[in-house]
Length: 195
Image (cartoon, rainbow, N blue to C red; front, side):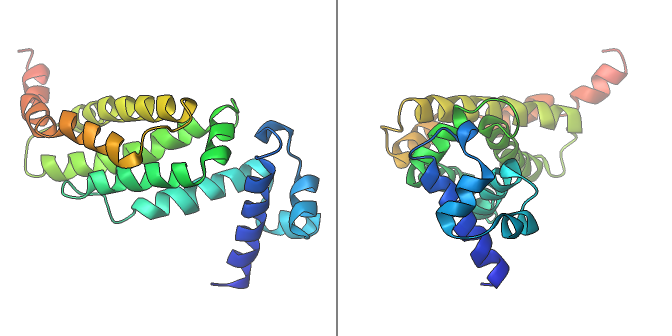
């Protein structure tokens, strides 16, 4: 691991530790650098502000963990990894979820989940005549459902194990994605022709 990555991870760890004491909105860059023994110049060399750091944590820790799970056979592994990661970083993400506005966690979660589900939808739609708009609508539907479940789980202090939630999601979703896509097959052409 490069020195730059080690420094970024130290800064991220400091922020996470501070969220056990303070709300994310109340933590300053000065508190972060004091906590990890660095100076402000080092912080600003790596991040433009606190929210840039928060985004870096979201993307490097959560999104990278699901990079190899973007297909139909392994999408539930991606969901399980996200939930396990959130559980392992419980206090930080409960705090992040309760911090509205800039870089809100639920918006990040929506984007990360939508990208994962959209990859699965593209795979299942391959060689089918399904418009991009219809594929996106189906991905949105499943993404909103998942994000709603996860937000409820986080706000409820993450009492259920990630495996339990994944199993329940799998039970509902298995066998529904392909038929949903098939119902849209050719529909955009029919709509374009006024049918």
